[in-house]
Length: 270
Ligand code: SAH
Image 1 (cartoon, protein in one colour):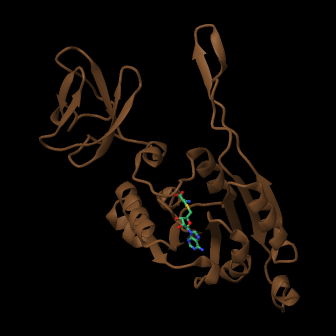
Image 2 (cartoon, helix red, strand yellow; image 1 turned 180 degrees about the vertical axis):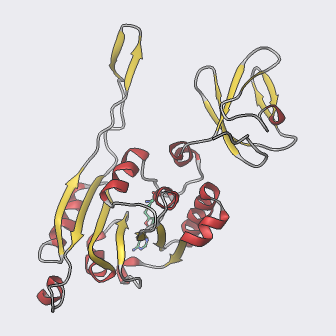
Image 3 (cartoon, rainbow, N blue to C red; image 1 turned 90 degrees about the vertical axis):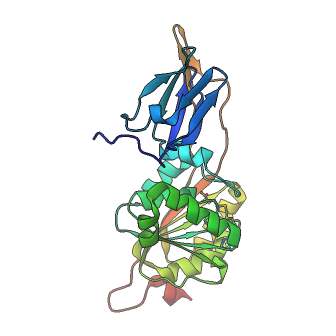
């Protein structure tokens, strides 16, 4: 679909070496480089991918950023979940349009924006007011103010103290002690709902798994995803020398439903 680049939009401007700059297009804006400048007007009204040259011939291409570009370039305070983990989390938690999700803590909003853009209704619990505000503005910058107002809300509160929402489809956790949330998630999820936790340390994942033993959660699984890029140039085709070797472990599980005519197994055990 042809959508011309418009004033106020954020684009990445890519040079001949693949270097990228995040730029907000302004009516009278100028993009300055060591090889001269380009007026934003040269991009505005053109098709995404438009390539423009400076007076000395250096070429620059403007494209709308992907969510991965945004996550790496947006203002962040807390550590964000990397795109390599965001993808698997979306599948593990079965995120799709209309699902209702509780997320804690929201940090800079990388996971929030990924879920909201995919059509989820997200309530975030975040203990730090400054992070809550930043997540809100990062999400709105990606999906637009109207969508953010409709499907994203962040409350400044401690998820270890409980979850008010009920009948949720998924609970997503990225915080230091997820095991405190297991009983709250049991009460907040619908039967068959999913809990997914991201943790940098395997001892955190192990303690979470321990807390699930004897709970209403089943099908527990802990995984890590490794991403290795390759150098591809003529005959030199090999893995790149460097990679991000570690980010975090993902633990998921699903909540058992009620026993017909009775209570949830988890409730019976307590
Ligand atoms: N997943 C986020 C990053 C989260 S960083 C992203 O992709 O951008 C972890 C966040 O958890 C921090 O912002 C921290 O303030 C918050 N946090 C820690 N303990 C919490 C708790 N008990 N309740 C709610 N938020 C908590």
